Length: 96
Image 1 (cartoon, rainbow, N blue to C red):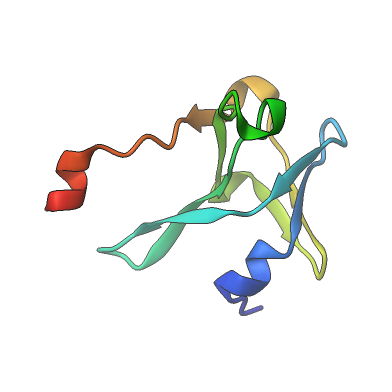
Image 2 (cartoon, rainbow, N blue to C red):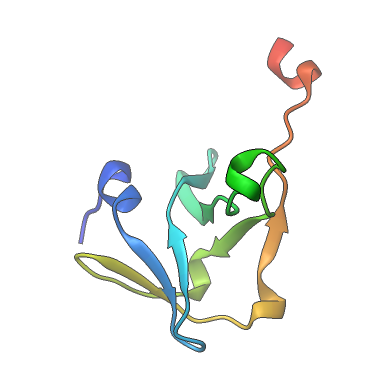
């Protein structure tokens, strides 16, 4: 199945182990040398309507993806296995 990034963004991510909805795909990490997608990124939920910032982003490795369907992406991982990172951007990186 060939899937574009815009169609991935419209799919909801659901954890099969817990049954919880994680959110929608917001971004991807890609290996530029091998032209492979490494992981899907779901941005953290806003706190206090975004005034208090956001929760940590959830990074889902491609090995944790079980099924990509028409409306949902089913993933299987333990909550402790989820990698998170913040979306802070350094000005130095933008100048390169």
